[in-house]
Image (tube, rainbow, N blue to C red):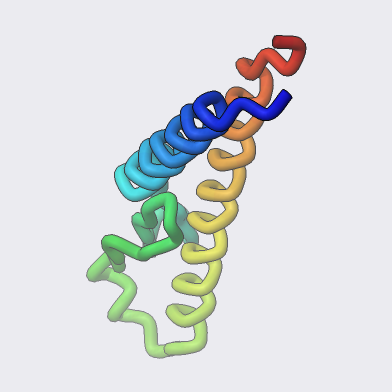
Length: 101
């Protein structure tokens, strides 16, 4: 039998859950690095780069391609860490759901 009150409660819980996850993702931070820490990029859980650090000693290098490759590797490393963390959070969530109720 259709229970509209139960449906509304489920929708409310889903909305609350969505807002909670969005807040957690915005506050989550990972840092990817390349070149042994010469370049570091901090990214949040919604894939926004928040900070970029480039070791000042790198500017002694004359090869811009090297710097570009380090930045690219650093962003990719940070993105992978965000994805891995999201997968872990989803696994935890699914593991905590009781589908038998």
